[in-house]
Image 1: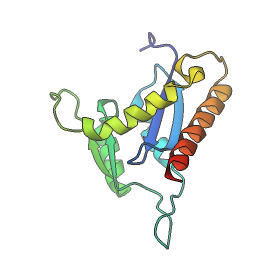
Image 2 (image 1 turned 180 degrees about the horizontal axis):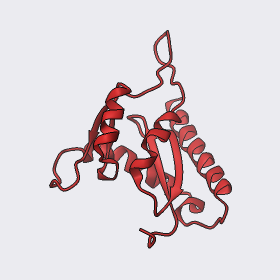
Image 3 (image 1 turned 45 degrees about the vertical axis):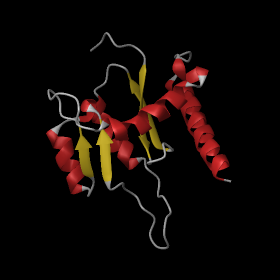
Image 4 (image 1 turned 90 degrees about the horizontal axis):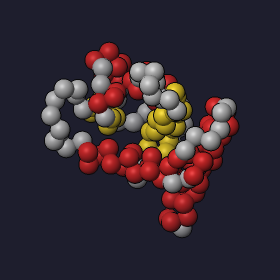
Length: 145
């Protein structure tokens, strides 16, 4: 759809809404094409003693990421896809889980530089996106201390 100028923010979060990986794409790109590169960006998350986790147990996503090919690829990686199906009525209960990501995107858009696209260059936009991600994570850690 060439009528969608601007950019999209793709975000993977944990259960608390802390961004684990973010990606910036053009507004006219299909969402599902960014699913696997975004999962590859997730850093190792230390938990219990042993090997750090590199992948989530399940992935909750909206209809933009619904494609059977990518569902199979997620199963092959050991990730359970919980993705809303296109063409089916709402009410699947996924909104409870997707709210966490929507809230994180709202936090990102709370930063004025990310709400409206002021920059022409993508690298500057990605730098501001990374800075906003750091600030959101810092606020979560500060709340825990």
